[in-house]
Length: 56
Image (cartoon, rainbow, N blue to C red; front, side, top):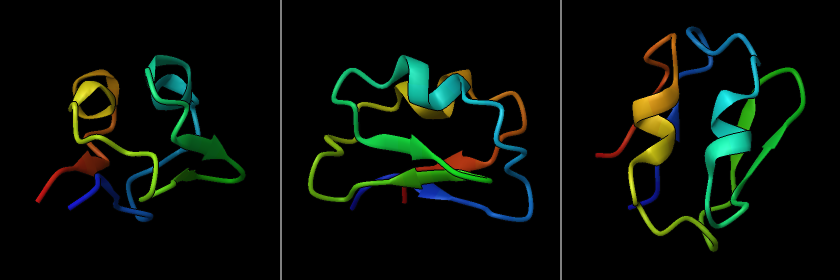
């Protein structure tokens, strides 16, 4: 299952978008993860300063 963004915690800082090796994350007012491109590497989870991304 791809990474999931908690919209209540995401502040749209862009750290996850910059760090994603698969370019699976785009940013509007918050992070959006493309499930088809996400390989569940966990990089976005590690770099998110708000703890808004998880892999379940």
